[in-house]
Image (cartoon, rainbow, N blue to C red; front, side, top):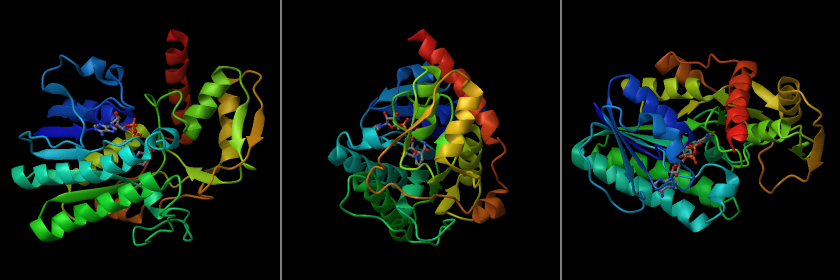
Length: 311
Ligand SMILES: NC(=O)c1ccc[n+]([C@@H]2O[C@H](COP(=O)([O-])OP(=O)(O)OC[C@H]3O[C@@H](n4cnc5c(N)ncnc54)[C@H](O)[C@@H]3O)[C@@H](O)[C@H]2O)c1
């Protein structure tokens, strides 16, 4: 197949492009390089079937493809809050442009939605049927509400125009090619520990998150696109739940050195807990995560050691 990946030069997008090429598909990687980097896909440039296009999803585009994966959107709070209006435009206008294209060329289209659509959840773990608890006017709303609106658009195009959609809600994912300065907790802790700095924990550190290793996530994406039982929304993530203190201690143990844990005040609207219910992914995709946190953290540490040494 010929497959378009928007946001293909980002953290998840670059792993997805690599996987799809490896499966024998042709891949068009479209990115405006806001948070993505050419270095993430450098090893794919020149490979048969790979094409890289600099383009902003806010502007319409035309390509002939069989499938579309729409991943374009800054994903970490410092990046999506850098220009909040641009963030919501990327989610909403990007979705409209991708859906218009999917409708025209009759492509199956995948939306990278997020567990942030659940907000600060009052249900735990979160099932797909839960409608969420989201602040519509806060600092995180440009991302959360942008993604919620994109989901609405996907389901309206599906109902009104028969567009063949797949909507996935991604929970915290980590691994090689995260940006060292993107403010996400796994990369923060690892980079601080490698640099010998103290690890910053926000609040008491009792808030929990579930962390999925990137290879597990990408396997879930590909299986979701290959099946017809459900269009979603479908949670994909690792249900293993860890407090921020537990994660910080694991990173300290694996990196070694003299760093210690320090505390800073919690940012506004920071969810206290987040854990996917993956019953539907197990049922429809036969999928569940395989990489234990310790192994994934070791692979990610190895990546950051290389990147930080090179800089
Ligand atoms: N990594 C996670 O834990 C996670 C969790 C939930 C949802 N997601 C979603 O998955 C997708 C990929 O996230 P990621 O972690 O790889 O983040 P990322 O920031 O590494 O990737 C996003 C990519 O989109 C590109 N992009 C941003 N705005 C664009 C625009 N207007 N036009 C074209 N390209 C644009 C960026 O340059 C980047 O390459 C995002 O949609 C994100 O919301 C990720």
